[in-house]
Length: 443
Ligand code: PFF
Image 1 (cartoon, rainbow, N blue to C red):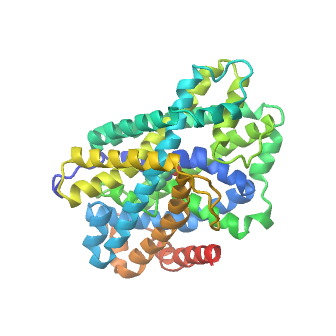
Image 2: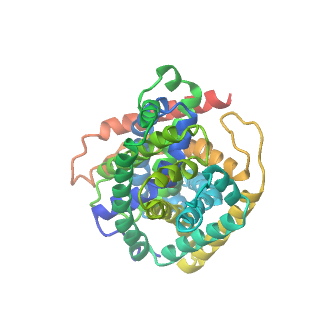
Image 3: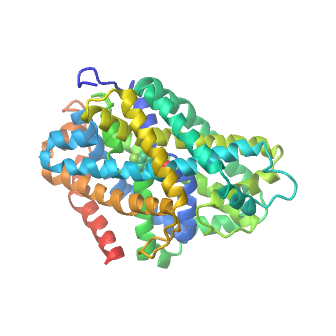
């Protein structure tokens, strides 16, 4: 697509929905509860909140500015503004590949649980942990992963307005409704109180431990989809009237609300069912069926929830797929169809390798066993925070202040009271903080 004929999202609300669709996904509903569970619950929530406001929002605003100003893919965007910084775009491309190498697998799990809600999942005497293990060792994760890539592929081929926009508009509101309903339901489960205590009453000693801070910053970047050019790519479809700061606040708040709602559903359920909150990656898939089991029509509620989780994941997979597709089609002058096909094929190959390769080594902050766990660690804990750090340095120092001011005020047509605060955060606070956390974890 040339610059003049480039597609765009139709209006302000759609821009928010698309970016929120990217942000809200497995990160808030699957990853947030288990990482919080491993890091002390409420302590983690507190640091995560801070991380969103102090580093997440400034990075998102910086990415929005680069994307909308250049109307290019991640690599093209940085290159147009400063040739020597195009590597920052490439680091986003690499992160998108790593995320593609495992996100579809987990998204496939939710699809499997959706289908299985009507199958044997709620039969008498099923133990959900055993059930999860059986599923893991079968061929089905492979099948559902491929189905998920195909679904993403279909939306992306259809392009920005038909695919991404329509998908986000319908799915996001539905997700809110079901989460709120479930949060109310679990409140009445026996033993739920301990879950609230775990999730909402911070132990400050733990909150400011190096491990918690490291994990919370990674989670903030991952859940906001920042640090890898995804928001650069999406903002390249924003129109010139989109309010970048407002959009970034809306997206961050929506993401935060979903993560908190997920916590308010999962932790009471976990404690009520006597499951350890530090269960790890299977947490949602083991604890939530316990909740559904006690409801009337368990299969129906379970199916609705896992369908929505799959749909929320879909609005995220399309976003990192788009990072790669936009890059390939624009940089190599390829048709959208071909670029999409290459991206989808690569994604399947990476997932297959990641699924069947063990990776059980000791790296500070890493506690996985499979290559897919390593992919998650490298993206959320390494590339995204570093990408975010350099994005702040780029917009804060490399570009003239007028660049940011121009983008935040839509070239002087609106006011931006937060310009100075954001510039300060981008220049000093975010880079120093991310750098410090990063160095203290690894050195
Ligand atoms: N933010 C998404 C989630 O929380 O599930 C994951 C994600 C999407 C990360 C797109 C990065 C990205 F570029």
